[in-house]
Length: 112
Length: 113
Image 1: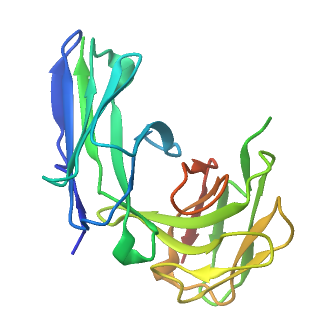
Image 2: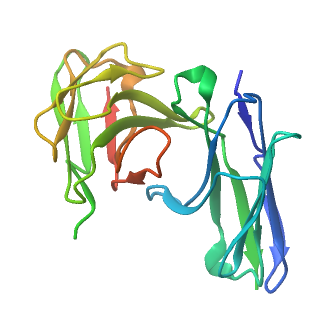
């Protein structure tokens, strides 16, 4: 049973729209949260890290963390076709010896 | 800086053969990791090395061994390959430890027949 859950998608959004990707986790002791982007056939690329409740913005990307509700989300503003990829949520789980646990990923498709 | 490099990029093995996957990083990171990625299973940690001279098991260590050769290099060995080890293998590194941001290499696609 995966402790980090993501909707596998695909999530389809039109170019220029906001894409909203969600991730829930089960370990209340988790302290570190990461979003990775993975293009088909390539390796995961770190986009954002977030450690505190609230929002963290970096360019067109915003990560949101709510520890009370145990979810973390990634918003992509002004989505571009080049954003089409699989987005992986990763959580540093205290009850897994602090190892990173990855969700299965959400496939995002941005249509021109 | 090359970041994290891995060799080889592709490999085909027969059941029972052995091989070593090589990983090196030039970011002066202390911690290094080996993951495998399978369809429907996501990324799973095989082994990690929190610092030079130490190694620890991850979620799926059976059938693998690792060596932290020095601060830069971390190798993964399959002693007797099995079809269940067909996967894409990624090496990663982080500056300080498990709670830090991890940076991934390009991966090795391994097929065991």
